[in-house]
Amino acid sequence: MTFASPSTQPSANEILWKPRALKNSAPAPGGMPRLIWEVMQARGFNSEDAIQKWLSPSLKILKDPFSLLDMDKAVRRLIKARERQEPIVIYADYDLDGTSALALLLKAFEWLGFKDVTYYQPKRLSEGYGLHNEAIQKLYDSGRRLLVSVDLGITANEQVELGNRLGMDMIITDHHLPKETLPPAVAVVNPNRGDCPSGLCHLCGTGVAFYLALALRRTLSEEGVLQNPFDPKALLDCFVIGTVTDMVPLLDENRVLVKHGLLQLAATKRPGLRVLMQALGLWGNPLTSQDVAIRFAPKLNALSRMEMGIQPIDLYLVEDEKQAQLLVERVLSNNQTRQASQKNAEAEAMEKLVQNPPKSSIFVHSKNFHRGVVGLVATKLCQEFGLPTFVGSLAEEDGVIVGSARMPEGRGLNALDAMGFASDALEQFGGHAVAAGFELKEKNAGLFAAKLEEFFAKKAISVEPRTWLYDAEASLNDLNPTFMTWYEHMSPFGAQFTPPVFCVKNVRLQQVRPLKGGHFRLTLAEPDQNSALTTRVALWFAPPKTHPLAAIDQEDVGRVDVLVEPQWNYFSGKKTLQLLVQDIRKARTGSESAL
Image (cartoon, rainbow, N blue to C red; front, side, top):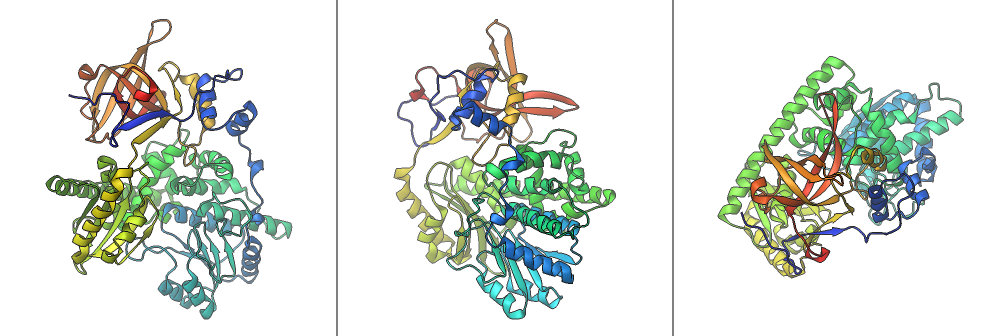
């Protein structure tokens, strides 16, 4: 096995390790572990008071729900509907943010005394995102005269105008960015509408729905018509799933509500969610945001991706324990189907790329790629090759390719700019800079590939080396149970407050055990100050095949440097400390600039 030698002038393909911030020499406050102090300072917390407020967040920081513009209009229209017992429909996006918001509002409306509430969600593959004219017409024909959107609708001007012509009132609740002109709805509750003074721009769709429930609860209580007041904390199991999976910043209200919500989800009264957590070995243990994002949510997400007769909302709403068991069996079976479909697509894509090695970008498509997994395959290939990646599913009946695009992290590349350059080949495209969607006719596939290559070949000169930021240097002995008690108080972790990463240098690779799925179980060892041997189990999940140590062997490597994220592992009633490997390399010496 050969390894790249250290260099002070790394290539664009080399991954650099750098501290998140310069180390502050000020001593840690009494009782606080050095590592916690260093992590919090690296994240911009420079006083003991600021750190204590972060470690012990309070629900008292929550902003007034009526600070959201148009919230008063939304509440008055809904209270009028409650008084008249008007039929209401909640129209929700199909993703886990929209689904969680839907489940939250359905339960809140039930507790608030609304009598006739139904819901509608467009299907991911057959209908697509957003408010649809056909659906609005059908809902009106069925007798619905008030529609509440969740997690969508902010750009649906045409659809709201249709509702107005029909005589259907609409309340838009959303968090996405609007167009220049807002839809002409009864109320538009969106912290990101530009003129909203709430300062709640970090909320996702579920967060906005939660604030609507808070505003309704307060108003009905003040008016003395709420017969069964409820604790809003009971809705936070839904809030957690929507907020964590939508990757909004875990700061301010999101942080404190997710922290409380993880406790609520761990003891949820929803049979479907509880049985799924039992099946995944999560029930009965403290939950983390990573548990929700990595182990729990993907099983639900696979339902909307595959469209096999069961949707995520079914798990939220089922009330019978036996029915919940049957649904969870279908969820896990569906996820296996998704995994197999994804694995087959990845294998076929890799075969295509072996035959035609990519240069500056990747574009692969096939009739064998399920539309529900193209985004996952694009993510995998993008991580594997470090190149802009476009993966499409071909529908033979109409010759249309529908796909997803992913950009490698830290490269400053923009998928929308690339597809704008290639727009002559496309029917439509949209999304975000690093993750987007596209559609084109099969006859234009060659033109699209050529345009992408032309665009990214010009961009290659500005590619920056990829960088891993770590929060502090640590020894294995530093990462101990006492440290973990403090570490847990720093959580929850997520967008804009990611899990801390620690650089552990020059430790012996004592044991390597390959696991199913291309993963590794490593045993790391180093002597402590008393010359006793400290060992830690470390898991390295699915390292890229191009990684220098992908075929790792302890006899060949010997000593290593590792970037790790500590966590508790719960198994067979035991709680043990383990490390998640983010990157690993042969041990180096010398200055940080050589890292």
